[in-house]
Length: 180
Image 1 (cartoon, rainbow, N blue to C red):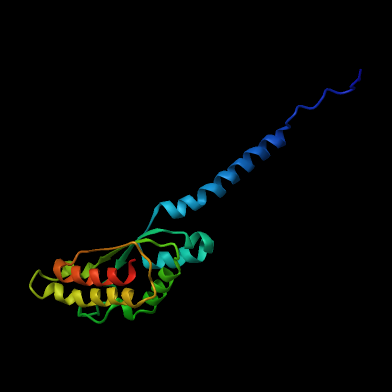
Image 2: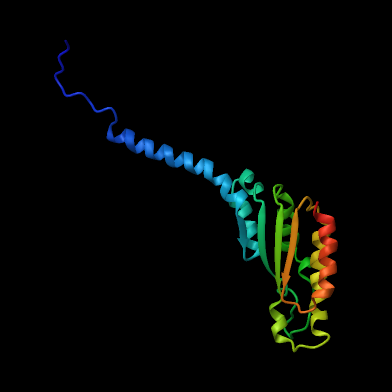
């Protein structure tokens, strides 16, 4: 028979139970974070946000993004001070950086591009109105087609240009190149 001077300690101390909670949280995080990036559609409202995301998220997690939806203000470089059309977004160095980031997304399977032409609302509806914006959109899609972005299952485009017939064929050409 043993004699104890002190009461025996409980099996778990208070610090052990806190540690167990922390270890459980860590396990949930480690198992859940890949699901967060690979099973959700990452919705980005500005291409610059994709740049910041690529710099802050661990590379392996960033590469595991499978579905991406991006809003692009496609008319941001189109206007000059006198509201004339100046050029295309693809001439901006930021656009090339943006495409480079898309190319690094090895797990990317679905890409939805929402190209908004904010200036379109300032032009009266007419037969030549959409033509002003159709060429920059074509250049944007051509830049995607010429990039090394490949292996997508799906590519979609949403835009506020009213001439959807002209755009449809261009989108199909891009799909034929970048989708498997």
